[in-house]
Length: 191
Ligand SMILES: [Zn+2]
Image 1 (cartoon, protein in one colour):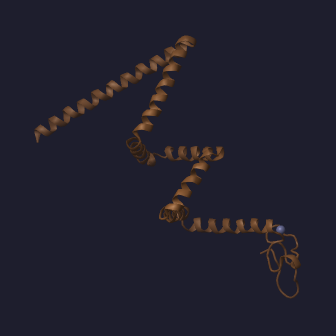
Image 2 (image 1 turned 120 degrees about the vertical axis):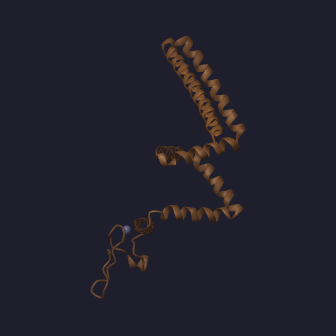
Image 3 (image 1 turned 90 degrees about the vertical axis):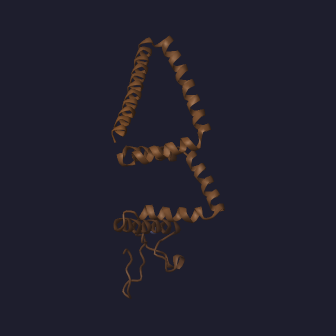
């Protein structure tokens, strides 16, 4: 603690910056001004948070789940939360952080099935959006293909080789699926 108590010393040092606190202005406060008070409060919170995380690694997760449950139970709060989320998503640093978080999440093999499931669910629930995205992507791909054909024949050849490989793989997968189906039939007939 950065302040000295007791009858011998009545001087109060700021708990954040260590300067002497003017008691006539600050009264019994531990800090020399409001700025230090806010910074000190944050420091205390950070220490408490670190202690809680050290004790329980799921603390943050549980806290945000609790908070979200509270928001979800109130339609007005939920709407405000969604609106705020929408605004946050427009901020470049937020987008950057979100991208990083998603990359980290996807790079964990444990999350792969969960992520695929979520993507499937999203695709099933939003066929119009998916169709629009695909149409836009196809159009862009076609334009790029035409451009390469005219301007960069080397890259165009590479692209064609890639396309051929993709089709080969697709056909191989299809054949494999058919084989498996036939095999399954055989097995079933044997039983
Ligand atoms: Zn201070």
